[in-house]
Image (cartoon, rainbow, N blue to C red):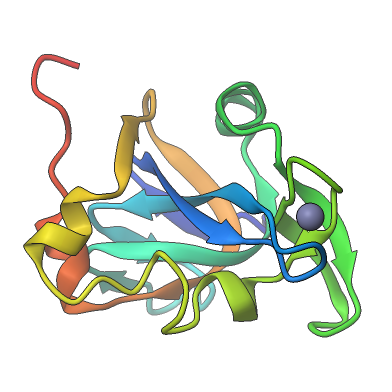
Length: 152
Ligand SMILES: [Zn+2]
């Protein structure tokens, strides 16, 4: 029995920008995108899903964790009072304020593109290998439009 109930064959990091709520400075935020996933929370009846973002990530497998830390040091575990849980949240590169998932993934945030042009504004960094996580998944039509860089 593991808490890492979400498993995927691959993943990518999406990078966008927001304005820090604290001091109104521009800061980068990263989301973990997966092309599809299996949710094993109910072991009897695993659920399959399509392209998604992982939100409220409380745990990651070691390899993915190392890769995320290297690529996006501002994405790290922290306790969120709003969510009342500890999860991998984005932090401001200037003041280190937590940029909560409720904010980063809101319609005002970078991970709410309306069309292909909006999707193309996100920087895509392919991950290495499979991923396992304890997280929530959010699926939306635009996530099918994410293109991995060729030859990666
Ligand atoms: Zn800040």
